[in-house]
Each structure stands twice: as structure tokens, then as C-alpha cells.
Length: 285
Image (cartoon, rainbow, N blue to C red):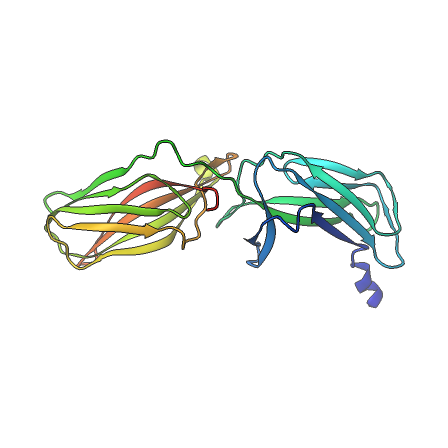
């Protein structure tokens, strides 16, 4: 039985290290099993370089048909020709100015990952594979045009309100500032909330699947408003787990954000108005 258990142990240890591991920023990333791990952070056009060490278990050798490293979805580098490894062997690697236009993303039904994959190819016992995740974040300058949002919500002869948000594009640590004006109130409003919703769309056409999450719920008012009343809005985004807006990433998925204004009357009827906003990552946000 011990022999059988040993047969499934890897024949070597593979260690992947980045050249600037001591100085590069590390950020938390959630794995598929929900576990949080710290991984290095990169952005598009950076060099991804380091070393791969392969060390056979004591008293063993590794006969292989080649060693390679892949930046999954991008590039392959052959590190070694077929041969034997008797002792620890280290291979430097570098992928220069790598184009990584999309950010790492982990959603409800889709994950976008960047992974280094090392493969030791063998004829017997199966290839030996090791993975190393890293995270990509890309930064945007403040938009040159950032118009305010002004809209009206009404029920004929019953309710007429106007709401205004100071802009339509926000960075991840921004503040949503606005006002709500009550022009006509003939129904009894019990409370009013402002929600931030994330809508994740995967697939295309008839196979599109949409998941909507409410990430934040901010109480604007508790009690009945009167005609002419104005309610201020000041909602900080930094406490919430937001990502930048993603539009049709590689024709696979999109992530959009909405401000959803919800009014509830005394009979628990709900009235709402939804407006899309754009979220972007400003440097240091």
C-alpha cells in the first residue's frame, strides 16, 4: 500500500519565482475554492521575468522530453531540450512587454486569470505541471469628458421627481454626489434607497446569461417627503468591492454598474429608476 501511495507523489519539486519578488506589490486574490492567496501585481506592457527551479526528490532522476513555461493564453517558451535532471536545475525566463489589456476578474460565472504554467514533459507517469497565478490591473487617466446625469421619474398626477448625479464616470475610490428634488408628491412614500448594482453578462445572443448583484444599499430618506423638498446624495465607493467596468471582453463577458433609485410607498409598492455609470481604475485606486 505504501508503494501505491508513493506512486502518485510528484517526482520533483517545481518552484517559480519572479525576479523582483521582494519589491513587487502583492495583492489578495480569491481562488475557485474561496481561499484568499497573495499574488504579485502586474500591468500591461510590463516584463514578466524570473526563474524556475526543478529539483528531483532525493535519490531520483527525471527523464523528460523537454521543459517549457507558458504565459497562458499568450506565449510559450521552451526552456530545455529532452534529457535527464539529476539535481536541482534552474531556468531563467522572461516575457518582454507583455500585452495584457484585460484586468484579472473573478465574478459569479466567469473568471479572467493570468497564469504561468511550467510543464516537464515525460513519456511515462504523465507530465509534471506547476501553476503560478498573478494579477493584472490596468489604470486609466481621469476622463476628459465626464457629464453629469439628470433624469426624471414620474407617475402621472401622483409623483414627479428629478435626480441629478454630479458625473457619469467614477473611479474606484470616488464619491457619488447628487440631489433628488420632489416636484409632485401625492402618494405616501415610506422610504427611499440608492443601490449600486453589478450586472455580469456571459455568452452571446440567445445564450446570454445575466447575473445581477446588489453591492451597496444606501438609505436616502426614511419618512414621507413633501413637495419642494431636496434630498442630498453622498455615497463613498471605497468600502465596496467594485471592479472597473468591462465591456465585451474578448466577446466572452461584460460587467456593468448601475445606480438604482428605489422608492417604497406605504403599501409596499416599489418604484425605481436605473442609470448606468462607468467605473474605472485611477492610479493608486
